[in-house]
Length: 273
Image (cartoon, rainbow, N blue to C red; front, side):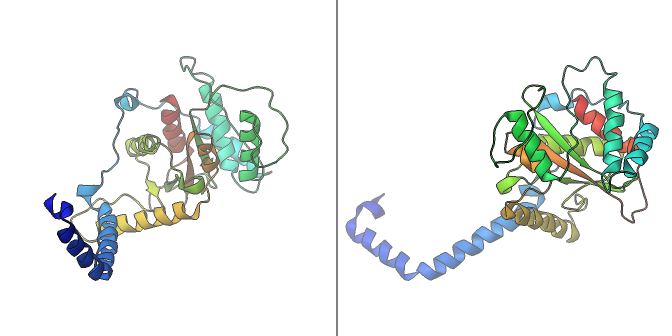
C-alpha cells in the first residue's frame, strides 16, 4: 500500500506503465489467447457429467420398439414431403408409444411445422400470445402450460451413423448443458455416436490429436455463437427460456449404422426423464 499512497512512487509507477504500455498490451493479448486455447486441455475442461443427481435416477432400460411403425410412417410421408419424412414417421411412432405410458406425469407436444424457422417462430408466438416479428398466425385452440424443454429432430434417412447435436441459439444463447449431457449419456448407453460440431469427443489426450480435435470443436463453437444466428429450430425456443437442442441424423460412410429403433430409444429415455 505504501507504493500507492506515496505520491512520488505513484508517479514513478505511472511513468513506468506508460513507458511499457505497448509491451504490456501485447503480453495481455497473448496471455488471454493462450488461456483461451488452454481450455481444451483436460485440467481445464471436463467431459460429459451430471451436475444434478436427479438426472440419473431413472436411467433404466428403454422400452421403445416401434421401429417398423416408424419406417412405415416415414415411407408414407416421404411420398409427400421432400425432406424430414423419417423424422415425422419417428415422431408418430413415438406418439403412439407415449400414449401407453400412463404413469408419465407430463404433457408432451409434438410439433410439425412448415417453412422451417418461420413456422416454428409463428407457433411459438401464438403459444406464448406475443408478436415479436409481426407475423400473422391463427390462435391456438389449446395449450399445455409452460414448456420445460424441447428437442428438434432432423432425419433424412432410415439409418444413421451418428447424431450431431446443435446447441447454438440466437445471439449465442446456449441451453442448460444438462440436457446435452443427458442425451450424450443415453447415446453412450445405447452405443450411438454423438457428435458436437461434427466432431466426436476426443478419447486420447496423451497424443497431439486429442487437444487438436478439442481445439477445432471449441473454435467452431465460438464462430457459430459469434454469428448470432440459430443453427436449428431449437434456437428459437431459447428466446422464450425453453431449454432446447437440435438432433441431426448423419448418414456417412462409417461402418456402423443404426436404425430408427436406436434413435427412438435415446429419445424415449430423454422424454421419460
